[in-house]
Length: 107
Image (cartoon, rainbow, N blue to C red):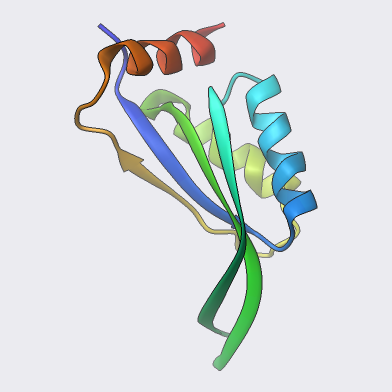
């Protein structure tokens, strides 16, 4: 039985930064896989101003036990003062794939 899988949603300021973070997370077994989706527009409030920026989305596939370490690693690697790193539990799916995620982050 695999450990509880989750997806961690993150954003980065550029595709290059996203690749660098994703590469590190997979190499360090904090994530089994990281998907990178380029060219997203974010509209947000920061320091009492409404801002808009082009960002890149990262979705890391991991297990809940690794989310704390993954979050801390991203905070070190990231250029943002307050990076978006949020975890979403995976309730069901292809058990072979969920086992693969668990196996990859257990190495």
